[in-house]
Amino acid sequence: MNQRPEMSTGAAWSSGVGEAVASTQRSVVSPATAPLPAIDTTVAHPARRYDYWLGGKTHYAVDRASGDAVAAAFPAIRTAVLENRRFLQRAVAVLARDHGIDQFLDIGTGIPSAGNTHEIAQQIIPSARVVYADNDPVVLMHARALLDSSDPGRTAYIHGDLRDPATILDDPALTATLDLSHPIGLMLIAVLHFLVDQDEPHRIVRQLVDMLPAGSFVVLSHATYDFMPAEELAALADRAVPSHGPFRPRSRAEVSRFLTGLHLLDPGLVSGNEWRADDEPAPRPSAAETALYAAVARKP
Image (tube, rainbow, N blue to C red):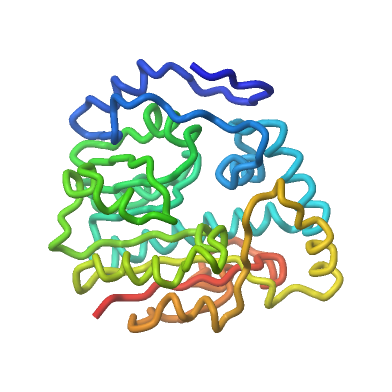
């Protein structure tokens, strides 16, 4: 197994634990017996940096340094990631409770933490099924050990890259877990802003939406600079160094293009802190602190 220098984690690293979970009836990791990809500890990864901001323990020194640099320019970053997490939970609850959605494809899931998609969905529909996908081998290892579903639901994990949707859509774990003839909730939570324009993110989202049956939903959140004051924008630009990885915040018009042809649920495409947040505790953060667009839209 590869060395894991300077990692802060309390989770088990045993691949044997992962394979045991992968072989259970209720959880599938694909490919379950493949060797783990190498972990690059020299470059910050969004999933590990996000875990650091959430107060998790699964990150390296390079992720912490990158996260601290972003926080120095944008002090509200931890508020923003918490609000993003709360939006995910509210959106999943709305789809399960109000629309009967009982299967989800969550791409860019990140390192498991409390309130994952399957936990929220299965509280409402115990038989709900969820497929997670991410491209970080650290996420893969933790998914093997932690994404165990409650009976009679089911979860699966695909090690795939959103930049190449075929690595997700062609994986047998997808159709083994989800029924692609029935509506699905496609979760694209805080992941599309890691695709630069050369990755053709709008084409990729269209490919994913075309796969969905009618009556499915797209749940999307996306970083934006639209609400930020000029001084914070300048500070972020000064710290946009390559070690932080690709990052492309988008305007409202650019984010709206991802939802072309879909029917927006109320309140539409709004700041993440505003999407059906009436029951969230006060005081609520501002749009500038959240720095995020959010929407849920139905495929007709």
